[in-house]
Length: 141
Image 1 (cartoon, rainbow, N blue to C red):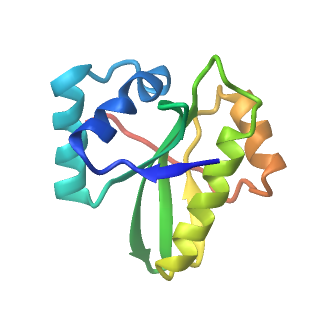
Image 2 (image 1 turned 90 degrees about the vertical axis):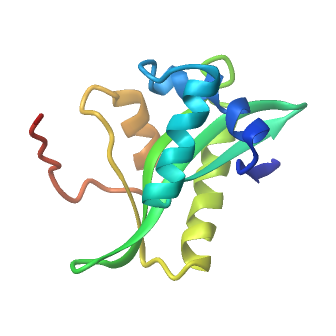
């Protein structure tokens, strides 16, 4: 399954339709591109996608950073498969690619946050060998 790093403007824009299925608050077009470019420049955000027949089937946004508790980790901020293409292996292929990406960059762990209401996603993560390790607390400022 072909997986590409979305680095050019065209590649980033191609992920918008699928990414907005997970993050519908994001703008479209140039607004989306500006958000992604800012995250890339300021926070080391990276974007990868499964592309088949010229169409993005799944997308992932991630970054790598060091922590005191786990060393270097890959933090998976966003993982989404096109809602019309689910259960076809795109998410699993992208997650496997991300594990390899993490290892290649010296990461010891792959972390992600998943909203408590996303039960279907939780089942997927469990099938992929992931486990719940902690609570993530949030305060809106």
